[in-house]
Length: 110
Length: 115
Image 1 (cartoon, helix red, strand yellow):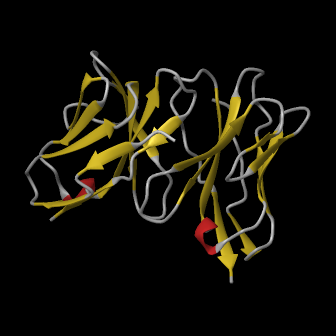
Image 2 (cartoon, chains in turn yellow, cyan):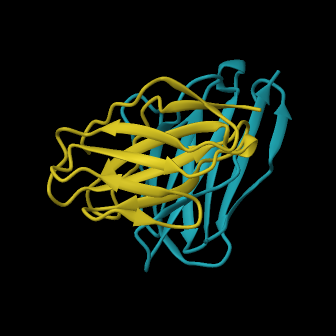
């Protein structure tokens, strides 16, 4: 798995968009970019994943740089329930184990 | 999305006893399940990869005789912490991947406290 780097923490005001960055400069051509988030005392929750094209789902959007060395998870309107640790992971084949880095701790200010 | 459950959600046991934690994929079949451990304010650490019908693959530094993993069916994997000690107190989380999806789904976790 390619190593990813994320800021340790970020803050956002409630109801504003949040852009969570991730660098994965050693990513290979077949590695997917996955995002998970973990609320306090819960297991991680799948957020979104993509390969090359930008992706949207009901939870978030994923913007992938053209060179694939970085990506950004976009929460369009932060709510207090979005306060969590967000993990960016790049993975090879779908059976590859998921190795977690420290992630980004997102605080949402009312 | 797919649902993964864990049982129990929390357990308190005495030092020296063994504890079994179950991980079930409720609405899909999972040929591969993963077990993680998470200490307070730290990230998840992968302990082992569990494959249905075969022996688990343990990460470096994880004692296979202490953390017994059994993946007897396509919907159930168990982790047994044998002769538990206070330092084994942690949050144990499993994940499962279905045969038709590229996504891993995580259980809610089991909080183990060893007195």
